[in-house]
Image (cartoon, rainbow, N blue to C red; front, side, top):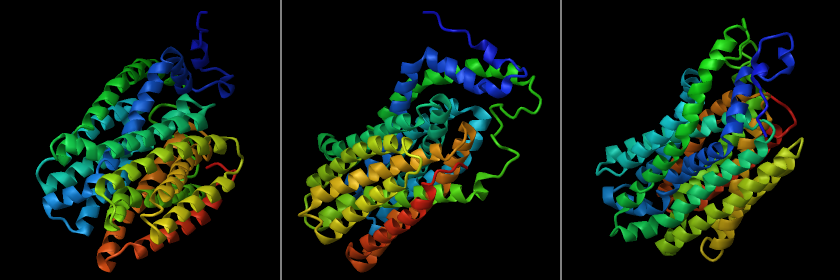
Length: 433
């Protein structure tokens, strides 16, 4: 069957208000022409969105010994990338408007590969500097993916959010389970164990290249057509609702942002310290790494299921209660019986963590009226959210060093869970920014 001609959808006429925007029509043609290639590109890019962070946690003790780092300094190995998840998110929307989402995503994947390699150079400056590059690269991926999903899958945004969050967590699971075995396979080299994951970023960049070529091909056509629309505000460099209220002045946007930040904080505390919590209570490093990988694996279930449920609900409040309760229960278990109940707590936390991140990302899409608003809300939520989340690993490490135990750090995270529940109930209302 021949593909229907959609060029007439781009004509500027009196019926434009009921027809797709030039960008939407062009994106739809590209999707129809290359749906499998686009899906592969999204999945491979998503695999990298946590992998470089999760690969470090099982090896923190070896990294600390190599450089003679204290607990607080060790926490910076994970806190620095998370900090730049927030700072990098500040520039992501501007870069997307200036150069287009597809080229920026390609750049992010290449930057990620470089950052991973820099991080394993024999210098503390390189260790932290590589973390800056890794965090910035992942920030670009984090911010631009929801807008791209909203643009190219407007009727399947929740299900596609499940796909990419599931792939993101699957990538974290793969590297968490492989870090210690790879270190042993490379003769005890934690540097080689971390460096190998640069190949995953390069593979994703190669898979994403066709989308850059497609975007370049359609840009010229769209510019010629949209130039006939005086003040249409639909060009690639404009933002939807430019004459309306900024997302930074929206109470709902702040509620979504704070939920994103608080759930990220509890997740990155676990990414940074879960294996250490177990080993500090007498568990072997290999077993702690396997349980950490199991925690990441179980997150896939929550990340797939919760966005699908969220997309079928007008209000997501029941899901807010569910995911925050699971995370709080898991953290309480780590405080009461960290070793004897390790597998149970890892599973409960995993479902809650995966569901929470999937719900946070889905609410960015569901609370946005269009793709441009989704991109701006994503930029805001992930800028403020990850700046807030960066405090978590550093504060947990500092409190642990000061108190000599994990009871007080975990109690503080339980307070974070309570705050996330409160703000999440507001963010989950059936409203749009």
